[in-house]
Length: 330
Ligand code: ASP
Image 1 (spheres, rainbow, N blue to C red):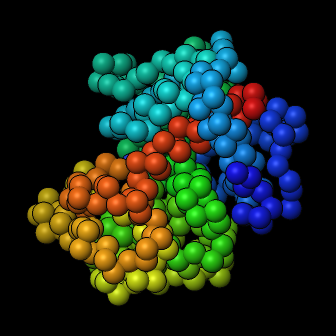
Image 2: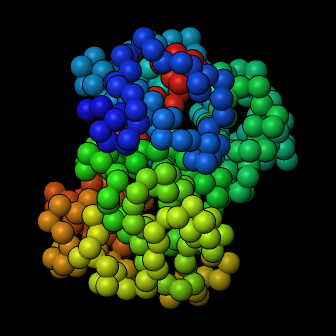
C-alpha cells in the first residue's frame, strides 16, 4: 500500500526503498505531532510499510547493526516500551532498557538533563517516557542525540498518534471524509491530544464524547477551531455512534486523578459491548491505545471491527521507521 497521492493527498509517488529519502529526520528529535506536515506523514508511513513487508519476509534486518537505543521509562509501559525494543532489535540494533528508574541514579535525585547527558554517551537515540508535560522538550535541550517522546504526562504521545493514523490508513485506506469519535478521558488522555492534532491536517469531522469533567482541553479545541477543524462535543455515545467511522476509545486514567472518589464515579461511565455495537456502522473501525479496563468488553474482541490488536502491531512498524529515520538509515 502506498500512502502518498491517493490516500493523504501528497503530490508525490511512492519513494523507492533506500533510494530517494532526503534524510529530513536525521538527527532530529520527535517531540510533538505539531512538527509534522502531510508530506512528513507520507514519508514516515512509506518507510513503515516497507518495514511491515520486510518483517513478514525476513523478520530481522541489520540496518541498525552497531546502533544502541536507550529506552528510558519513568512511567509504566507495556506496548510502547516493548515495541521500541522489538523495533530496534528487528533492525539489528541493541537496547539499554531503563524501566525501573528506582534502580537507577534517578532514585538518588539525578536530574533529567544529567540522566540524558549520561545515556547519550552510551546510546545513539533515547526514547523517553516521563510523567511531566514538556519533559521530552526539556531533555532535547540538553541532548546531542535524538530524543523520541514516548509520552510526557498528560501532554503528548506523538509515536502513538503516528501509529494510530497509520492504523486508520491501513484499515480504511484514507483519512479525508471520515468521522472520528474519541471517547472517554479526553482531559488527561495524551493519545487523543496528539491524535486530534494530527487529524487536523486532514478533512475530518472530530466528535468528542466524555463526561463533562473529562472534556478535551479548551486550548486544544480552540486551536483546532482556529484552523477550521469541524469538532463537536457530547456526553452520550448513542447520539453519535451511528454516524461514526472510527471510534477511538480511551481508558479513564486513575493515576491522573487527584481525587480518587471522582475516579470511582467516572471509571465505568462508558462500556462498549456487542449490544452497543449493534448501533454502529458495519465497517466501523474500533480502536484503543490500550491498556483497556472495563471500557471495551472482551466479548467485543472477536468482532472484525475491533482493530486494537492490529493497531498495536502497526506500532512496531511505525517505531521501526522512526528509529531508522532519526538515525539517518532509512
Ligand atoms: N498507553 C497509553 C498511554 O501511555 C494509553 C493509556 O495509558 O491509557 O498514554
